[in-house]
Length: 183
Image (tube, rainbow, N blue to C red; front, side, top):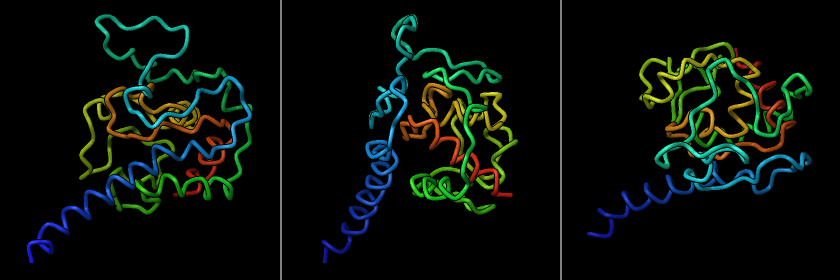
């Protein structure tokens, strides 16, 4: 009978690990056509590493985040260069749905992404955001989401989001097109 008592917590830990693993490993199957795009990594520590050519931060700390109004990507591509396909974005969003709901008022490991476009970061009532996210000063414009979805830890160092990002800029544009439908 003791197996029944510890089985529940073990199952919970296993399911949580699988969910986070799914978020982190989603990029391994990404169709990347942009040679300048960074290689995806399942390690949160590596995901927050500065871009190539960037000077390391003093004391070995994580590099400073881009300014809240800065939308420059690591690969240098711009959101305006892509036209998103909401249907393809909905398919790609399945990766995100492990941790985020598209439905209003439904928080999971991450906050609901309903009406995310145009919303200030860290403002869903009842969700426990990290101070890094809550105090980022970011408004989730399509351009900022495009930058964030490339490498979340770079844009909001200290976020608890373990997802390494979508290196494929077209996939990011598609996801954003889908997110824009969630109103």
